[in-house]
Image (tube, rainbow, N blue to C red; front, side, top):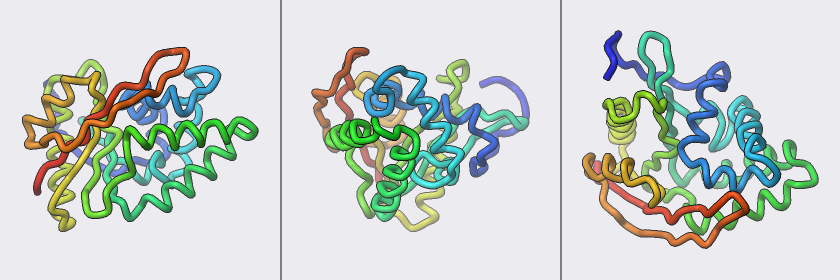
Length: 209
C-alpha cells in the first residue's frame, strides 16, 4: 500500500460523484451495461451519476461509504439489508422513468431479469454491495480495510450475518472474500447477454459476525 496518512472512512456526499460513480460502475460493469446501457455504455455512467447525486436508493450517495487517505477517495462500497428493498425499488423506478423516458420499460425489464442472478438483499443479512477500489491500488490492502470496516459496522448494528455477491468472472475478489471468512452459499447461473457480451454467473457468499 502506498505511503501517506492513515486510512479514513466517511459517508459519501453528492460532491463525490466524479470519483465514486466510475468506481460503482467498475464493481459490476457487465451487469450495469446490460441493465442501464441499451444504446451505449456511456448511458450507464450517466444514469449512475444522476442516481448517485439524487442521494436516495441503492445507487444514491446516502447509501455509500468512501475510504480515503489524505482527502483522496480510494474506494467505495455500500451496506444495506432487505428492509430497504421496497424503498429502493420505488426509487429506482422513479429514477429510471425520469432518466430514460420512453426507453424506461426496457430498462426496468432488464433489471428484473438481472434480479434472477443477483437477488434482492435478505432481510436479516447485512448486504455489502458496489465494492470497488481504484485500479492502481488493488491488491494493496485497501479493499480488505474497506470490508473490515463494513463488517465492523454491521456487527455493531446487531447483524449476525453479512452477505455479498461476486461475479464468477472475478476470482480475485472471491479469493479475498474467502480469506475474510465468506463461504459460498449459492451460484446463480446467468443466461443474460447483449451485443457487448454476457453477464457472468454470480456467487452469493455469507460470513458470520
